[in-house]
Image (cartoon, rainbow over all chains, first blue to last red; front, top):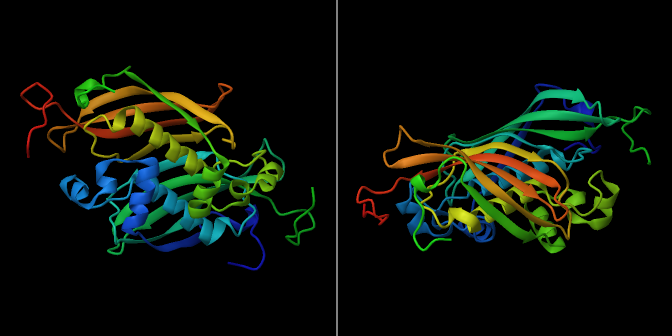
Length: 160
Length: 160
């Protein structure tokens, strides 16, 4: 993380950011599932083993949310971000099981100025998330709105 | 919810399920954001008002997770589901603000048997989520793996 917050111009295509590591705890899997996805394989070790997932497995929506947190810690909180319009791609390739550790990287695929909002750009990322065995567990793409560098060129926040 | 759990065959194209209502509380927005998406507009009312979202706004990943919970309560927990391979479409069309109430529906777009897994089908849904003013806040599509009805034809679970 740099001392100065990043602007749109700091996200050229090809720029790459490290994600994680994020250990995945059984308690976190169960807590998320209780609130958002209370299917048996996300709530109980035995039910997970009996399912095609093979163990107590994080909800895919939980994996996606953990990806968001890894993005936040890697670069989103350190940039002038204004939110995202959605998710372009989200593939849950392999189960994420209790005891796994996730890491990966985000790469800028595309960066363009927004026509509809002055001073804002859209940066499209590809996210790759792997487990501790280097297996791809989640492949995703999404776009984030990021402010352009103000005209003084110094990266200082311009008051509105 | 029917007394008997649903199989793949109970999800023909065009079948529609009601989602919600789900009131969105400020505390829930903040709690999710603290864990998964700690950007200021998701943590603080004043920061949300100063952002382009216009108020304390749920993270898009939170909206998606609330959608999952509405699906679970509407039909997933009442069906022989075995998880999902990902998300095909996720558009966060309008901010979801503290105090909003979400509802909507899921419609089956497509249902096909899996070639790679005997006894399993893939059902693709379109999900529409609106706020209390009838505004579309989230449009999504995803596919879910659901077991086919066992050969005895009675919908009884066949032991494995």
